[in-house]
Structure formats: C-alpha cells, structure tokens
Image 1 (cartoon, rainbow, N blue to C red):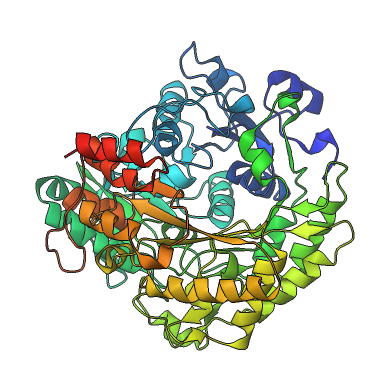
Image 2: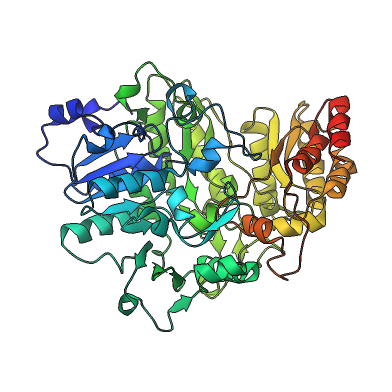
Length: 586
C-alpha cells in the first residue's frame, strides 16, 4: 500500500508516454473505475498478467456514445483486448427490482450514474470487433461468466443466447480468471488455439471442431429452450449439476448455426495459488486519475480482507457458486496476516478492519472430511436439505485466524461484514460442536458493532424450500443463544434478520405469515430485499418458468409491480402507509 505510482497501469496516452513502452500486450476495458485493490477483479487480472511479464493498459468506463476515441486511443494490443462490465452485472448495477433506473453508481467516481452502458460487455465488445476485427476479444467477469449459456434476462423478460453469440467475442473466461487468462495470453502469444483451455467458452461454427465422447454433455438447443420452458428448465438442471461436480464435463449447447462449447473449469485453487494472487503488489488505491474524487464502492471495501473464495451453501437466488465454485479455496493464515500488516501500515488506516470476509464469512478452510466422497458428489448444497455428514464444519481455523489478525500492531478492531451461515454451528439441538459455540460468542462480542446481521430470508417452509434455505426454527435457536450471550455480558445488542420478498413461491399469504411469526417478536422488520432475477440462478429459472425445478410442477410467481410492492409493504414501519399500499394492490 502506498507504493510508487509506477506500479499503476496506464489509462491515458500521457501515462503511457511516461512509461515509454514500445507496445501494449493486453488492453482491459472495464465498466468500473479502476481501483488497484484485490477486491476489484480488473485489478487482479491486470496485476496477474503484469506478474507474468505482460504490459497491460486499462480503459476504465470508456465513452461509448461519442466518436469512440476511448476505444481507439491505445490502438491495437499485441495479444488481445479484455472486456469486463466490472464487479457487477451492468443491468443489476443500473436498475432496481422494479426496473427503475438507479440514480447512482457506487463503482463510479463520486457515485455518478450513466458512465457505463446497459449490457456493457456486449456493447464494448461489439465496438472493439467493429474497430479491430482481427484482434481477439476475451470477455470475463460476472456479467460474461453468468451469461455463458442460454439465460433468462429479467430486464427484457426473455431468454437470451450466450453472450458469446450476442457480443461476437472470441473467447469467454468464466469464474475466477487468473489461471485461464494466463493460459489465454500464452496461447495467443505462441500462436496456439484457445479452444481447449480450461474454464473458457467458445462459439464454434464448425461441427467438426465440437468435442464429443463420454466427457461431454449436449444440451437442448437455444431455439428449443425458446419454444418450451420445460426444456430450458431441464437444460439448467444439467448445467447446475455439472457446475457442482469436482470434475464436470464439457457442456455443448447448439445455438443458431453453431455451438456454444463450455470447457470444464480448473480444479479448485490450492492455498499456494491463492496466496500468490493476493501477494501481488496492489497499491490498494484508486488510480491517480481520480484524485479528489470518491468512489463509494472503494470506500466500503478499502479496509477489508478476503480470506477465501467459493460457497457450498447452494442458495437458489445466489450466483456465487456459479461464478466462484462450490468448493472452498482458502488463503493461508500467513498470507492473510501479511496483507493485514500492509493495510495497517497505510497512513490512512485508523485501526479498524471493516470485514474479514468472503462470500460466506465462516466457511474458511471448510470442506469434506473424505475428499474422495466429494469427488463423487453432485449435491448442489452441503447444507440443504440437511448438513452433509462428510462436511468438516469446525470453526477452529477461522477462530485462530481472527486471533492472528487482531494481534497485528495497529489493528484495534476487526469486523465481520460478510454473511454468516448459522447452520454451520447450530442445528435443531443447539451447537454442533465446541468450536461453533466459541465462534458465535467471539463474533457477537468482538466482531460486530452491536447489530448482529443474519439472513434467514423467509419464515415459511414452502418458500425456504424454493430458496434452498434451512428451516426457520433454526433462527429461533440462534436468537435464544444470542440473547444468552448478550445477557451474560450485560450488552444491549440486537439481532438483525434479512428477508427477501417476491421470491418464487411467495405470495401475500406467506408474507403475512412472515410478518406475524412469533419468533420475530420485538424485531423491526426493516431489512428486506425485493427479489431480482439474475442470470444463471435457480431462482431466476423458477421465476421465468413458474416451475419447481425439482418436480417441474407449477408454482406461484408474483410478476406484477403492484403485487411486489404489496409483498414488500409488510416490512414498512409506517403501518398506515403499509395498509394504503395493500389496499391499492388488492
């Protein structure tokens, strides 16, 4: 942190001239402002390529409305253009669940809206292919990753083909991109084919180049999905099953006059690989071009530490497993502590770490006791409908890590801002083991601000089954143990549950039951998120098809704006306002 500006990547011709490079190997186009921090994917990819000896320039938030000078200013790279929408799908970034345009953008200087297009990956790629038709364009990041096959797009209320087909990109990297992007760069540099690189997808026009055999699985075509929702559901179930395997097959989907081919991913990253990516020389700062401006997303995460990737929770509405994988990939404790020391040495650090986290904070180093059984498993979740007996859910390592972090000179307080799965330390009988009990008390007493946030998501079992979430009675156990802890220590802490309204399977009756559940007595129901269907989640497929994906039977899905507002009205503090909305939507 605080390293020389020379470590930054050129974003303008002036910066490029100061570096005196005679060429650029890779030019990255990104929908976010460029922040050289390991929480921002574009920075991780840029740093990784740089560590391999490649010269990388970055064009953050290019103007796609003018004469396209941002797309022309560096000319053509020696190897390829890389394109990402940024840390979020651009449509989720732009629009609310009610499809209203948002007035701000946390990944833009001063939070200003309108600095990226809708469907940013598609827009940037089409421009680059028009300007430089012979230069490979490699797309990646969350927007590309989760649109790699036929998917439901909520904003058009339609099934769309793979983003490879719509954008014209030459190669798609899905998931976490360090290993595939290195191989892609090496292959292009050496004049080799990209078609067989793991964790990449391609749109292939020649049937003779499409792989076949026992290690491939053919889906129904995009056109068949358009004609029959059940076909789309069956396709998705195959995709999800393969995604949850340790050794998945190559997935092939006919589309138009060609085939979308998705190669299997790399194996889960080992500790040494994870450590190497987080040890790259990030400045942990926004690019100097943003001097005097505030990037809200950076302000939120600048003092956070990521300790692992992946999630085996299997929530239907979540994209984490589809992008990062089901298997947990953890950093070593030494790697985490080294990063904390760098953070603590920065002049602006005030002693408070905002999050020692990950997709799910307390899955650090968790996995199968017998990994050979994991290799044969196709379960979506290790926790639903019941915890896998092969799962080692000891919290001993994460407790040791918290202790090491808190002992670093300069660290006064560390918070856990990421989500916590309480079914990893509680079951219907109480605590699963002694480490779980110690963990919960440690987090409540030392790593919260007095408001302990958890996400039961709903109270009704029929909705929870659609979400792949544990029974709500477990929240009652959590609340009892929480009250015991704060009561013993004389603290006035509160528990804050998060809920989702409008999820498939949820109607007014279910919301009314949620609002009157006795386990929520004394709790303000003000933390609610209206369900938004996002590409490549089970919940979005449920929403589009109005089907239970396991049984193929029809389920209720609220699709009207008024009906969604009525469901959410059960959370409003102003009872009169809430009643008025309900009456208007009857």
